[in-house]
Image 1 (cartoon, helix red, strand yellow):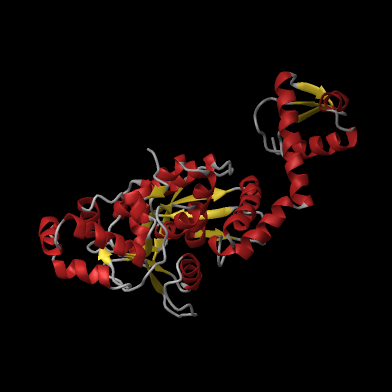
Image 2 (spheres, helix red, strand yellow; image 1 turned 30 degrees about the horizontal axis):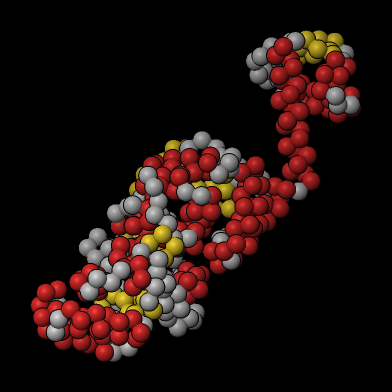
Length: 380
């Protein structure tokens, strides 16, 4: 399904203000058509309401009523939106200095995607909240997007996300408000450019993943919603991040036993993910990236790209190549294997000895091994 990256003002609800020059233009158009009271009756808006909006530089009007006035005055909507100097939500006094048409960016995707993890959507008024011990990183990101509140550190464990982001996300992604927290937003991202996919994955990892920088384990994502985890698996595949299969397990928590689902982003996936994160930060800023888990990710990423990790990967590649050779010729000598894969005998000998210790091959005679296609323990 197509994504609407370009959003015109009439496609969302709320209140807007226009510059004084354009307000004077509207006045002239109305008076040319008819007296104000007749025009007001025609469009179904009181003359007092129209006068208040047109005669005060800081007065806002609902988008719905502005469209009525513009259409009756025969003023093009595309011309009108160029003169919009402010937007505010119906239930808020915060004014956003937004230019229309508004373009939906990966930063907007990063903001709305926090709902998939520790977000909350009120079932009646559809207000959006993000619940965390430290909400300051999201506050800073929102502040950088729209300077609508006094920025300062807070100890609050939840933050209200402006309704504007709900409106533009629902329109851009063609989703209902309640679907912004479900697997559907992940599946909608499948057809988006890479930066949007990455922004969503970063938000989920920040809330739901465990990253251990001290060992070779992957990025562990654990959630109780199978459809979300399965969709994240597909998302990682599209981003070319190697992952494990989705694993189902029983979890014993405070409220009893429940089913959980786990997905690991493996070492090869972390290697590419690390490079992608750094590129993403260069384009959109560090405040759009991982927050509390950024340091752990970079430490884990450095392990993945280190010499030891690369050597281990090379060893695994050679092991697979030797197995493939054995599958064709089940009995081979060290010299024959060395010649086929073009690796020196010392290194091949070391790999074969380890394969023998693990019971993967049998030694027929000195320097000659046999592969039966069955993994055997050394005791056999």
